[in-house]
Image: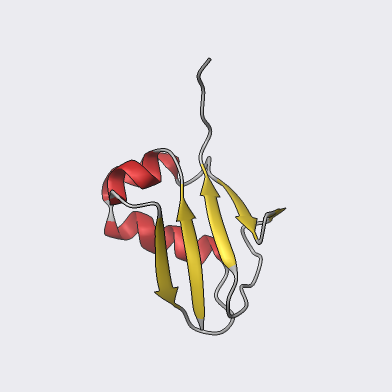
Length: 81
């Protein structure tokens, strides 16, 4: 199954791109993708427990099971003015 992962803030800075396209197994949860991304880029570890998730523009729980063609967004807390 293919999913698009939209990257924002620190995720985009670390990966130096706005999105990833991943081939995932059936029954993959949103949190599984985040864990893989953090494993690949250890500097993202501090953000693991505080990132929120959206799938197809709707906030979802970390246990949301993805479907082929879903668009996932990782949304870390941000601040600014």
